[in-house]
Length: 238
Ligand SMILES: O=C(O)c1cc(=O)[nH]c(=O)n1[C@@H]1O[C@H](COP(=O)(O)O)[C@@H](O)[C@H]1O
Image (cartoon, rainbow, N blue to C red; front, side):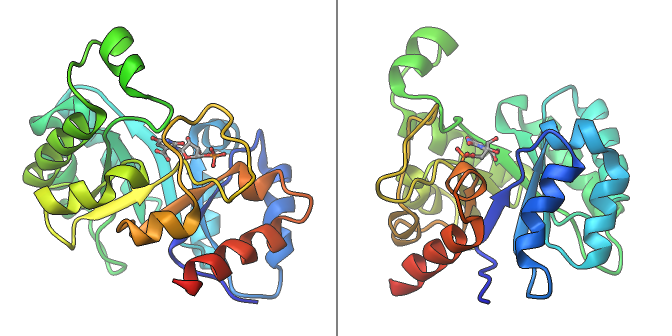
């Protein structure tokens, strides 16, 4: 069984039973990288997450922190104790908030290294009309994403969450090592659901994405492992 560290499976489930049933498909094989969002986190708590780390999973904790710098730093302090690999925070929280998070992540770095911080730019469920008319940000989505990417880069984040459409633009205004992590992944023939800025797995890699976040295309498939393996095969085709 092949796993690919570039794919994070979004464990968007109501509880531990559902999440563990999904992970059981990989029992006895290499472990896929997982993303725990707040639906699962609020249900199962930090101990469940720490236990997955102890089992050897690469864990991306998607809590999308957004608050005053001191509060976010304290949140990062607590999350750092879990040993997770990645944590999200909103770039729209501003420079001081992101820098406070980075400083705390550094202070708390241990033998396993430092937790990496990913700043959310414009959600992949947002298109230009929503951004302009509802959120009140003028211009194009690309302009907003690159603005936030530069801010996040300068403030000390390790990368951003953006759609694959902007992955190359993000690299152009930051650097090749600044991570572009892309949800909104839809293999050919899979419905977009609530996502607006979607891309196929191979299209995302071709546009410079470092990591793909894939939820329903795997978790609601009749055979989740087969769906995952098809995505691995697609991105390795090049
Ligand atoms: O931060 C995220 O992970 C995220 C940011 C974003 O802009 N869009 C987005 O879809 N996500 C997450 O990525 C996953 C996408 O799920 P699917 O649309 O089912 O593949 C969900 O867990 C979302 O919370």
